[in-house]
Length: 342
Image (cartoon, rainbow, N blue to C red):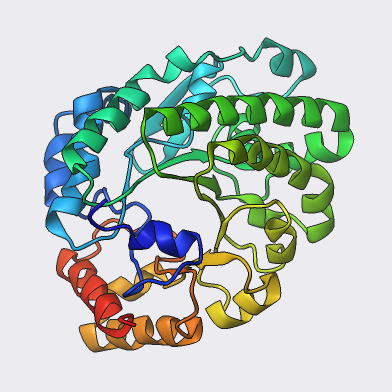
């Protein structure tokens, strides 16, 4: 591979400069992506392999990034299990038949790999087009985050229905998360077979839990997923938002890399989870709207906190926001390369 510094950092090996990629680096802030979306829905782009490959490659062609991430959506496994999924403008994902009762859990389908053939084909096409330039990241939603969407029917402020099931119908909760864990393992295992070099588990909503609840109701399922993926021998990244109180527990799930959001200082968080794990993060995505001198100062601060330790991947603390100035993304990458050179 021409550029393997991202893979080396994930394994805490020495690199010549800090690798950088951004969550949602293929997305609405890019005119190239907007032109595709003007003709196709999000689900179409996810499910038409040549379109998924095209938008995956757009930021790689435009910026000096150290990794690509396949274009998909974390909720695709839910649709394959029998949930009716749609994306509404200004509202986001909506599930029309949410999981609330025991028979709702029972009716969720077991998923065979062929259900995700479009995704695996997109990975194969992207790998061929990349031709070894940079590694390709695959991903999936983590069991809790998938469960919260399935139960709430979309986004939520307080996760009332999710926590009611968790606290009041515990057997039903664990049955649901076991089913979701199995689908996630099938999905990611076959992404690896199709050619991805790294996988990331997105636990976007797990920050709504206390450490005790995370440890009892979520951690065993995340650990099960990671343990079953380990034999593939590729780095596994585990990331959540609002998780500053959960980080030591998340570390115990066993991922190779732990992602930090922007609510914690990188050096303090790394010390808490131990320097024997690689870390990823953690610039506030809104900083990319700031003047360039401020972006430069903030990028340098994150890198200073990393302290040139082996095992740091520069990223945002969440995904790139719509309307982010493209030239600011480009400058941030240049700042990482300037100050992150060993």
